[in-house]
Length: 250
Image (cartoon, rainbow, N blue to C red; front, top):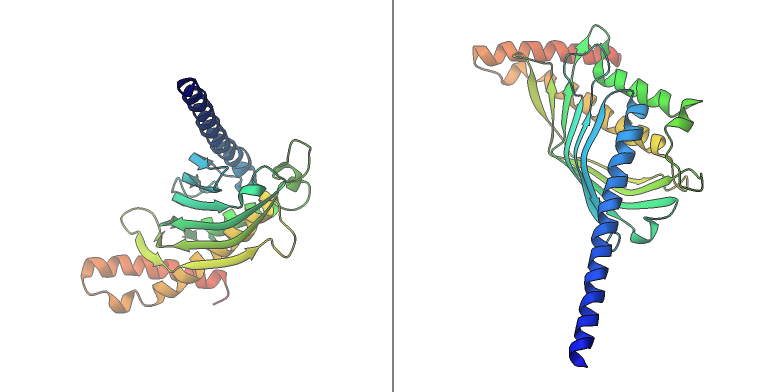
């Protein structure tokens, strides 16, 4: 009798574990498919997410290998690359139409910044994102539930740290560190915001952070460079910095 009971309990446990693994796998697949579907419509560039996972019990998960391509006309094949993003989601909100992200932490993000005359790849990318979240295009960039309701998000805390920005492409490129950026209560006051609105809010703040940090860092590049080779790179970097200042009217 006891043996039979142990067998039954073992089978139930195995089925439960299999169900959990299956649900977690499909949640990751849904996230990946969603990003790869809506990302290009929001940025109007190539967007690829390599993988994602999310536990329905704890709400913890991650996305890995997120690439956002450059708008047309720029040299680098990417504007942004995120190796790993750690997520903590309120478990009860995962299957609803109002998802609460308790924390989103981006570690060691990489940005590529290019300029020419009075334009930049980051500014072009931001223009794309802003246009996708307004007017007729907003409907095509908004994720919806099976019932057709817009899926809304709140992000309690967003952290970007240990990032770096590469200015220019090729031998003259210069890389500068990006200070930590923290944002809180994104979409809270509105009672949740759509996917395109969230993308515009987060990327808008991040890109502004990239531009301001780059302009500030390049101001002192020439002062700290001693070697001739380093000075050559610094000159190229300072030229890019001057273009940034022109963009923002000094």
